[in-house]
Length: 118
Length: 112
Image (tube, rainbow over all chains, first blue to last red; front, side):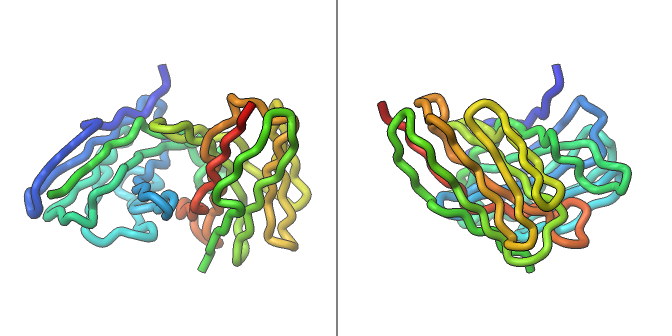
């Protein structure tokens, strides 16, 4: 079954304790991206990756890191989480078009990770 | 810088009625997307619109794009309760390969 798998589904942590949210897709997609969803703000893109070893900042990258060492995995790293990073996080993936842009007819989203930083 | 604005943000409608959600964007976007999110769930892709005048329809939902007016619409025909969800539009920032900008979403509630 084609899917994007995020782990964990729920995470409660304390300020400053490094954490990683994993994202894995089994569709051989080139494009992967991370979003945070906050009430009243919609979704905001954190980082995206067009392929292995190629990552770019989205609109709210501060406080986050990513890596793309393998095509299937795109972990989101919070080196020193703070309470303002409490949010619902989504990972998504897609194939790319011939111009190497996100294809997006089918942007597959993971189930989400609800993070609370105390 | 691309900004995407949706209105209304909240919409309560009766079953059987028609309504339109509007998505305005501030600068050129190569394409415009619509997504649906059910409460407590992830997002589901609905439509992608690639060119001026593009129209796509699935069931009771129809999306259109006017690039000159920088406007996309999502029209709901004869609403049913199952359409209750939050709908997001998103644009691809001009010149970017993958920088998506989302609107804040329209929460639709369809009542009997």
